[in-house]
Amino acid sequence: MKILLLGKTGQVGWELNRTLLTLGDLVALDYPEIDLASAESIRGVVRRVKPNLIINATAYTDVDKAESEPDLAMAINGTGPGILAEEAKRLDAALIHYSTDYVFDGTKGAPYTEEDEPNPINVYGETKLAGERAVQDVGGAYLIFRTSWVYSLRRPCFVTKVLKWAREQETLRIVDDQISSPTWARTLAEATAQVIAQGRGEPVAYLREKRGVYHLAGGGSCSRYEWAKAILELDPSRQKQSLKEILPARSLDFPTPAKRPMISLLNVDKIQKVFSLAIAGWEEGLRLLFDGS
Ligand SMILES: NC(=O)c1ccc[n+]([C@@H]2O[C@H](COP(=O)([O-])OP(=O)(O)OC[C@H]3O[C@@H](n4cnc5c(N)ncnc54)[C@H](OP(=O)(O)O)[C@@H]3O)[C@@H](O)[C@H]2O)c1
Image 1: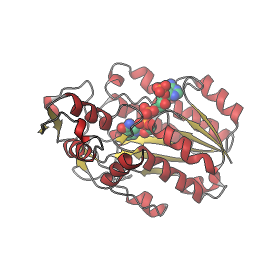
Image 2: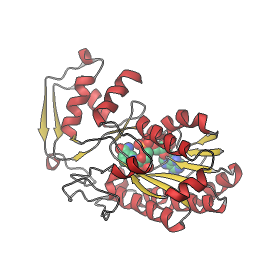
Image 3: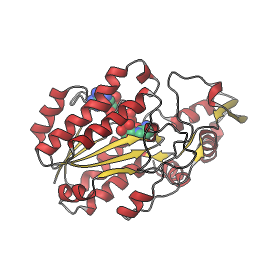
Image 4: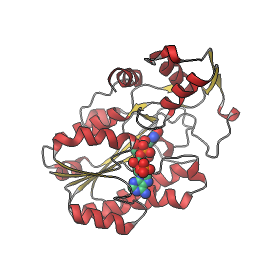
């Protein structure tokens, strides 16, 4: 099986690049070898590589910047995935694509299932939803994994920011009204690999049979404040922290260009049932990150 992985240096892509090696002949690329904002670039790469399976871990992920660059965000997150899906279908290949809890408005007050109607409240969420719909409209063999609050130590993210702030400041104020589930990039990559492995060399037929949207995130839930506290407690270099106190705050206290959904927690029952996956709690992922990275 020939696998084309896009976004190999991103948080999820980096983990996929090492996890997928045993599953087939892996071609891993990133910008500028492929530009998701260019139909010509996408078509050129896919037609040259001729994969059986495409995994798209690329995205425009800067939620605030997307507010001032909506066209670029839409090209990468909304239009590009649709072209990838068309190219996959043309080759009779399968496509695995990632999306986000930010397709929801966060007002449900309970974990979102795959049946809940998306209603994004920022540009990033709108573009990611457009990408989902473009892939679904093509209707080939696809899986869309919606995930939330992705972290790793490889690129700037909430975890690396909290560790940095704790070494520079004595007081930290973190919002406690945004609730979701932190997801270690490696957890996502490993779950993706387990799903592919279940296809036993026939990924297209298998993924076509299972095609659809799945929620895939760390188990359980927390606020950003609780997440930050857990990060600081598990920090293996705690002695380097200058922090004396961490205080809860409200999102309203920190105005940002993009609005965030308040409770965007994803219900992960479907993926666990369909693929017999056991999803570990979010704290477990954080513990493993600090133990093993
Ligand atoms: N991060 C989160 O908290 C989060 C939450 C929910 C869902 N997700 C979704 O999970 C997936 C993986 O996210 P991640 O956190 O791993 O993202 P990431 O670390 O930001 O990586 C994104 C990758 O996409 C590449 N990229 C950006 N623009 C591109 C373009 N025009 N053409 C080709 N590649 C381009 C980036 O390359 P450069 O390094 O060159 O920019 C980078 O390698 C995405 O679908 C994202 O929407 C993420």
